[in-house]
Image 1: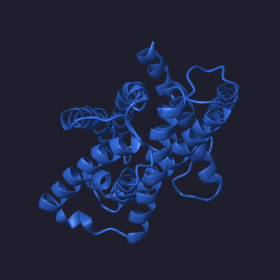
Image 2: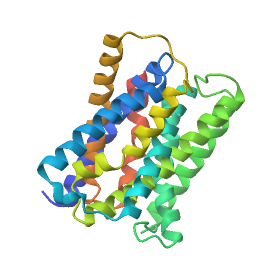
Image 3: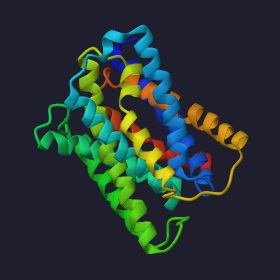
Image 4: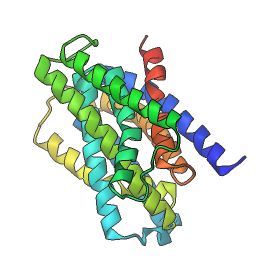
Length: 269
């Protein structure tokens, strides 16, 4: 099996698993703070992957500070935007807008001169991306008008949910760019996944401490249960995607991720 074929298969598996994740989280975040969830799940992830790398592949900590900071700040924006957006609007809406923005962002990065960005290689790709842009725009408009399923609150909540979904897609693409650079520098997928989360864990921990997003009272067993389920739903897809990053292009990753809403609608039906 070629590297590109393996990368496509890994990405499609990521898309399938992430679609189920969006639907589950959309319901969970109506009663549990997304920041508490993020702190627990990604805090465990950071400890597991950074700890494992430190024990078995300590040489992989040799990485440029600029790339490490960029991927961490990207993680802060994208995970905060994603966890908040699925709380405000229909999970399928968040996923569709976010994933649709990814191949568009890859093209914009190419126009800005970023080497991981990619041009439209033929008229079919150009047509497809135009249709994706129009679809994202249409979905954003009908969501703001209250015609696209659940919205927690009024039009302002819908606007915020849509903007956060766009931010999620844009910054997730940037994470892929910097993750690819880290992979090219010899950093493995486990190390990259762990190293891109510490600042996000710190930020969510502070938001939980300040009670920024109050949630329903939960006992320790319930918190442990949701943390475990969240870890199982969130981390394997991210790890598979991280494995796919060095195998296929940023544009291909974005285009395949845009298929996710089809699965998301299936799971939510």
